[in-house]
View 1 (cartoon, rainbow, N blue to C red):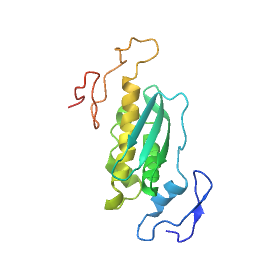
View 2 (view 1 turned 180 degrees about the horizontal axis):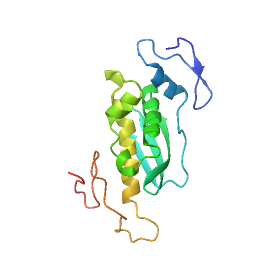
View 3 (view 1 turned 90 degrees about the vertical axis):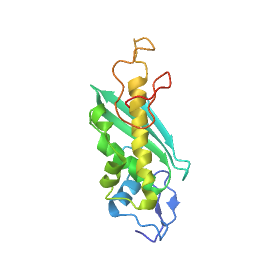
Length: 173
């Protein structure tokens, strides 16, 4: 952990040093200072947006799907280093996976990809995984071009938090 200010990867402004009491491992810091897949996808097939009222972190994930695989994924995140790093790690876990397999990515898998997270920051991995779930949900349930609005083009995902159908009934339970 650096005690010196560093250049922010998002806007080029000098960032103050990280809080000395907060322990971040090297892998997490690498994902924070050099986030993977940062940005937007203009013609995304699915978009997920999640905010955490507990800490104020929020994230948005875009996915592009080809042959039911995540061909491209990107994110933007407003939050602490752990939240940014979790979103970055999540994108590397999901890239190239079949949407069913990407839907199986858990909070624990994101935290493990970062070399673990402190108990105080574990909720940040939830933000990333939940945002991915929401993007996949949007892809699955968004009407496809050339279909009627109620023709969803396939079955809904079977796992994930807070999924409901158009009538407000739980999906996958």
